[in-house]
Image (cartoon, rainbow, N blue to C red; front, top):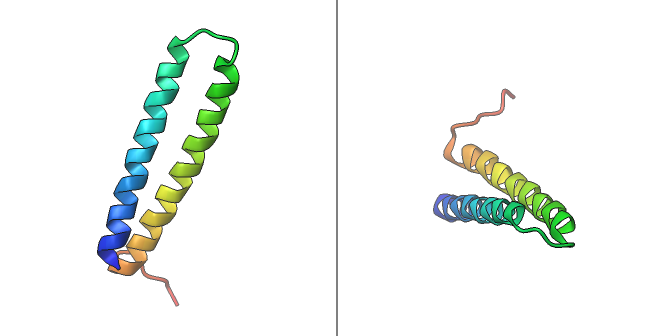
Length: 70
């Protein structure tokens, strides 16, 4: 379980990096759809970042690094 979560976390991080790079490349472009593409990439990045953070929290619970106080 821990290995699968770790792999999923790193895949999510790689996804964030790819989407971030695509967003930076999109800044250089100058066409009529640049603004809407930038907004869409930002939404994707925020979603994938949320997944990565959730995986990190679950991974913390599974490994015992995060313990509930009750």
